[in-house]
Image (cartoon, rainbow, N blue to C red; front, side, top):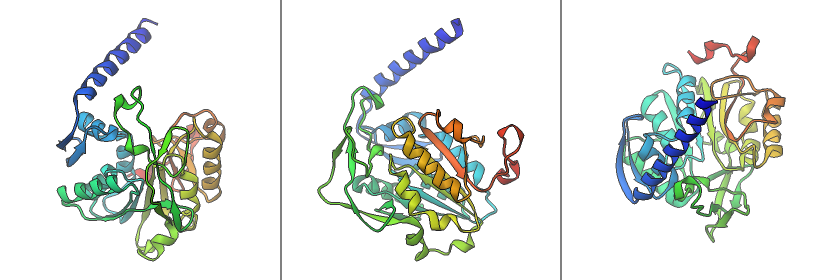
Length: 294
């Protein structure tokens, strides 16, 4: 009881301190992350940039999950959908030379910043200023409003989405181009030369459309891993629909620690990043066969 209370107090103190630091950390900065061994041009007025600047990385649990999945001896394909300023893509391109990286970022300013990060780190991979969806076409891109009570008062341009909501504002008069991933890749790359395919999806509610355009690729006889952010609190029904679609093509759901997730568990899980794959063998105690993580 006392321990729990002290943890809550400590958490509040640390958060207040971080809010104080965030308020005083503004503007553009060149920053080298020792955690990732990458150099970034960061706009610390933006939430994700500030988190990288302050912590050395953002959503580090995804990076470590990717690190476990990729075998340096194998030829893997890493697809970054909603790549933002490129933290995940840059990390994979730098550390896994046998892995081909393809990234998608539709927001023009963020796309340009991502391109600059590539130049700064001398890393060359395909980066497209496109949104990934169910079909070829054009859609309106929306940005969130600034909420001074969230994200330490920073602007979170990582929340751009093709889904209109009460908390988003129309950002551009021009539309962004959308492409179905499987068909788009089929004209640009030979999938057969890869041992495994890893896809990171962070599209703020538009996951279902991305998966629909991805389904033909999921029928390939490859080990496939999809690390996807599911906004379960906001749209549980839509997330369960996405879960069912992936399940129907042979992909099971796991936590980023690779613990198996049942249908029933998905009904109560919070927002977060989860892994769907056809590569693991379920064993007793909801554990997975470690041979695929070697």
